[in-house]
Length: 376
Image 1 (cartoon, helix red, strand yellow):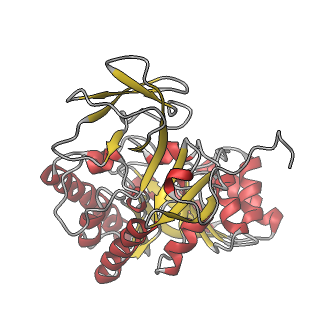
Image 2: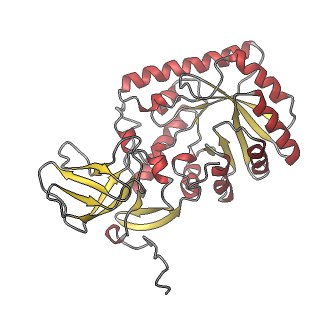
Image 3: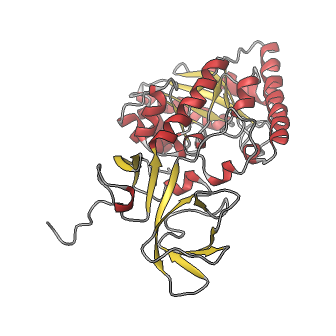
C-alpha cells in the first residue's frame, strides 16, 4: 500500500465511530422516510414532484427520488446536470437562466441525451437557445420565469411573458412548456401562518399570470416552482403542477427552525461527523469541523441530538476548527465523535466529495457527490 495514498474515510461495514472525520453522514432510514413522505403528499395532491439536485449534487439521491415517483430533477446550472444525466437521469430542468452562447451550446448538447428544459426572462436568451438547438439538432423545453415576490429573476406579468412566448414559437426546436414561479425567501419564514399567507399570495400572483395568458390565447400547461418550506401550500394551491423541493431530503437546521403543520415536517437525516481534537481550554472544546466542512451563511450548526435540554452548543467556526461550549460545564473528552446538523445543506454538500450512508449505525454505502463544484 502506498503510504501517501489517503485511505477512504468510510467503507461499508464500518460502524459510525470508525469513520474518519470530518465526514458527511446520511441516516438512510430517516432519509427514505423523508422521500416517501413528500412523494406521498405530491401523489395525493395530483402534483408532480421534481426535486432539486442543487440540494444534494448526488446522482444516487436523485435516482432514489425518481424511483419513488419523482418526474425528474432540477439543476441550477447546466454543468451541474451532466453527472446526473451520465448516471441515468433522463429529465432535467435547469431552473435558472443562462446568458452566453457557450452555455446554450452545452445545454443543447445535453438535450441530445436527456429531456431538458430551461428558464428565460429575456428575448436574447431565447435567441441564443434557438441558435444552439438548431446547431445541435436537439430540442429544448423553455419556461418563462415570472417574479411572484422573490425579487430576483423573472418578468413581472403576462404582458412581459407574451413577447417571450412568441419568440420561443419562432424556433421550431424550442417548446414553450409553461412558467416557473419561485419565491425563495418565503421558504424560510418561521411562522407557519405567515408562510401559509405569503405562499397563498405568491400562488395567486402566478394564477393571475396564467389566467391572463389564457385570455390572450396562450395555454400554460405547466407551473413549476415551490420548495420544501412551502410544499404543503403549493400542493393545495391548485396552481402549481410541479413542485421543486430540495432540502426536504435532509432537513437542515435552518429549515427545522420553521414551524410546521404536522404532516410535512421532515426528519434530520444529514449530519456532519466531527471529532473533539482539543480539550486544552477549560471553557470549551475544539472539533475538527469548521468553515471548510460546513457553511454558516444560514447560521451555525446545532449539536445533535437537539432538544429543550440541549447542553452542547457550537459557538464559533474558523477554517478548520469549531468551538463547542457546554451549558452545564460538562464537556466531551478528547477523541469523542460528535454529530452536527448543518445550518444549510446545499452549500455544505458542495464542500464534500462523498456522502456516507448509514443504517442502524453501520455504513451501508458511500455515494459520490458527483456534481460538487459544478457551478458553470
